[in-house]
Each structure stands twice: as C-alpha cells, then as structure tokens.
Length: 419
Image (cartoon, rainbow, N blue to C red):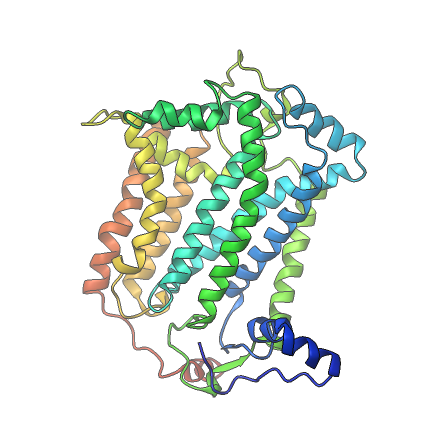
C-alpha cells in the first residue's frame, strides 16, 4: 500500500549511495521492515506471531541443514545416525536434534495462534484475501514437511506413521494404489521411501521460505490489518515499523526463545512419543499409532468417518481430512460480513470461541485411542467444524447486528486511554 506520508530511504554515506543506485537492497529492507513502512498504531501482541513464525522458520532451516550433514538416509542406518551418531558423536548434536524436533512444535504453536488471530480479527477479508490464501498454502507445505521429517528418525512411530498415512492414498479409486507405490517407491516404507522423504523434507522448507516472501509481499500491498478492522485513514493512524514494532516484536521474540530454551533443556521429549526411541520393526505393530500432536485434530477428522455411505469409509476420511484444510481457502467468500474484527461482532465472537473449543476437542480425540467414546466425540466435533464454516459463519454474516465501529484507528486508541 502506498502511504504518502511514509519516509523515503535517502542514504547519506557515499558507499551506501553507490550500492543503493545499483542494487536497491537497503531501500527494500528500509521500506519492508524499517521506518519506511507505516503500520497501524494499535497493533497488540497478537500481531507478534507472524514475526515469531519467521524466527521459527530460520531456526528450523539452520538446525536442519546441519543435521542433514550427519544423517544417514537408509533403513539400516537412519535410527542409529540420529540416536547415536548425532546425539552422542556430533559436538552439540543433542542440542541441534532437540532444537529441530521441538522447533517444529514451536513453529506449529505459533502458526496455529497466528491463524486463529486471523480468524478472530477478520484478516482474511478484502483486500487481504491473497495474504490469507498464501498463508493457507504455507500451512499445507508445513504439514507436508513435518510429516516427512517425522519419518526420518525411523523409529516405531515413524515407520508405522508412514505406513498408515500413505495407506490412506490407496482409498482413492483407480489410481490410489499407484499413488501410494509412487510415494513410497515400493509396497512398504523402506530405503526408497526414506530417501524420498529425506529429499523432500530438505527441499520443502526452502519452498516455504519462498511462499513466506510472497506472503509478506502480498501483506505490504494493502498494509497490515488491526484489532478494530478499520482501515488506515491518515498519518495519525500509523507509526513507523521501526523502532516501534521492532522493539515490540523483540519482546515477543525474547519470550519465545525463553520458552523454546525451557523446552529444549528441561523437557526435550515432552511433545514426542516414547515409541520413536524403538527401532522401526515392520513385524511389530504399536498398540496405538498416533502422529505428532499438531496433526491430531485432522487425524481425529480422518478417523471420524466410519460409515460406508455411497463411498468407502476410508475414502470419506481422506476427503474429510483434506477438506478440513481446503475449506479455509474459501473463507474470505463464505464470511460476507462488512465488519472485520470479532470485537464488534457479538454472534461471531461466540461462534469463534466455540470453534476453538471444538478444535481442542478434535485434538484430544486425535491423540486418544480409537475407542467408541472418542470416535463419537470426533464425529460430533468434526460435524461442527464443517458446520461452522459452511453454515454458521454465512448465516451470522447475514443476520448479525454488529456493534458500532470507531471512526478511525486513532479514535479507538484515544477512547481506550480516556482522552
């Protein structure tokens, strides 16, 4: 978005003038994250999580590149290269391994909060639809990257997770079995599958980084959203990104790194599964096969389909699981309310918090054994999940009476201070 009052980059040093005239990278940085990028003056700490996602991505890239130097991508050597070679023989290898494994969990925590913040404050609405769509693409890429990374340690849960998840592709009529064999490079997870997953796990984070650049680029065209949902009306509604939000984001990054450090040093295996410290054994099926915690809501939706109505239950499960993510692409057009922020939408606010509770229930069921109670709960929660986006949100946008919006961002800020 072009702000007439934005500061322009004017290098004073002769060297910087020479560089900027031939490669305007300093100008680009100044306009992207410096004083040349005005942002709404009322952004709260919920807006920190975009920067935190960037920090988590950098941590994953750095630790992943170093770990790849010591990883042996074969069915006979993967487990020992991770649990003996990296953990015991590589200097600080234990730190890199735990930082990478727990960094994935921290990444998804940040991403989920970032997405729910967007849902509550209507960040997916015009003119920011492309920002939201690219965010969903990034989420899909992260899920694929995380799944392939979970297979690499080649423990019991890694092997059987690959066996179960790729097995669902065989539910696709006609071409399903071919797709599964193509993914695995054979009829069961082995050397070929491990090499393919390792290659893709190494490649996809750089694709994610490219998508993040597009995401930020798309964001800078309309400018950042804000808690009121009211668009910027003048210079009084904005402040330069630097130093105001660089300082604010710095506080968020510090808290993030403190929590991350506590997880690495005091509870490195808390979010993992103990069975993954057992070498993969195709002849011994674990009592309870479960993916990583950040996949649990979608795993619950997958298992919720138990009826062979018109189509096999297995195929219904696959369609529902992928549909639960793909439906997010259509959200900007399902919610037609002219008011963005849930702060001024009383009915939508209630529906939002019910959705949050619903996703938590799905997560709990996805991590629980496939017993009748949890299956029924999964079915109820999955039905509500789809009803929220396909029925409840469109109806609310039609019949809800929003609260009065402030005249401007400045008016909302001054009202909070009593001025």
